[in-house]
Length: 440
Image (cartoon, rainbow, N blue to C red; front, side, top):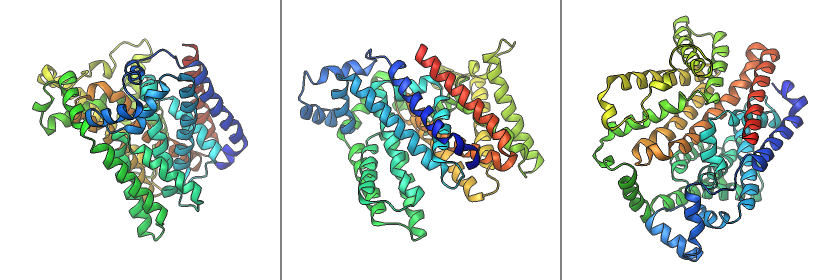
C-alpha cells in the first residue's frame, strides 16, 4: 500500500485541503440554526463570566465549549476558519491512529480518512460538523480527543511542547459528555497497556490524570441534573417510567436506524470491502457463508431505495421510535432485530478481515464496539430522539478508522490492482458528495 500511496501522497493531501476549504467556503450557511439564536442573545443578558457560572449551575459543565459558543456565534467567519482547522486536525489525528502498523503513508491515510468521512450520512455530518453549535460540541472535542490519543498509540518520542499540546487537547475534549464517557476508558486502557509493556511515561500519566479530572468536573456539574429533568419534561415526559431494558431497546433502535440509512455510504462501502476480503479469508465455509449472505442482503436493501426496483427497503419498515404504542407491534421488533443482527454480522466480519493477526482483529472489534456503545448509550438520555444524529458521528469515526485499515489490507490480499480500483471509487464518491454539498 505504501508503494500505491507514495506517488500521489502529496496530491491526496492537496485534495483533502481543497475539499475542506470548499466545504467551508461554499457548503456552510451563515444563517443561525436552532440553538445558535439562543447563544446569540446571552452576552446581551450576562457578562461572559456570569453566563458560564449560570450555565454551570443550571444546565451543563461544558464551560469551554459554552464560552466559545457565545463569542463565535457573533463572528461566523472566525468560526468557519477555526472549524476548517479542527476538521483538518480530525483528519490528521484519525489518519495517524489508523495507519499505525500499516504501510500507509500519512498523505495516503489522510486522503482515505477524509474520503470515508465524506461518506457519512449528510444529516450526521451537518449536525456534528457544519452547524456552529453542533460543531463546537462534537467535531471540535472529537478532533482534540483523537489527537490526544496519538502519543498513546504511536509511542514515539515527543518534545515537551508537543506533550503539553496533547495534554491540553485531552483536557478540552473531556468537556463533551458523550465523548468523555468513551475517551476516559479508552485512554486509561491504553495507559495500562503501555505500562504493562514498560513504555508508560510521566507525560502519559499526567495526560490521563488531566483527562479524568476535567471529565469529572464537567460530568459533576450541578446543572447536568437540572438539564436532565428539564429535557425529560420537554422531550420525553414518561422517560422516568422506563426500566433499563426499555432504555437499552431505545439505544439499539438508534443503532438500527443509523446503520440502515441508505445514504450512509460509509456503512455500505464497509460492506463491500468486507465481502471482498472475506472471499480470500481462511475461515470456515459456514461462517463466511452466513456473514456473506447477511451482508449481500443488507446491500440489496440499499438498492431498493436508490434504484426504481419493486419492493421496499428495510429502513422504511423500521419504527422511528421504540417506545409508546409502537412497542405493541411484534413486527417492529422483528425488523429491528434483523437490522441489529446484520450490524452484528458486519462488526464480526470486519474483525475477521484481519485474520492474520488475532490481536489486531480484537483491537478493531473493540473500536467498533466502542463506537456502537457511544450511540447506544443515548437510549439512557431523554434527548435520545433529538440528538442521536450528532452522537452517531462518534460511532461513524470508529467506522472510519476500521475502514482505513481495511483498505490497507487489500493489497496484502489481492495486490495493488484491486486496491487502486476501490480507492478510486471511494474518492469519486467522496468528491461527488463535496460537489453536491457546495452546489446545494
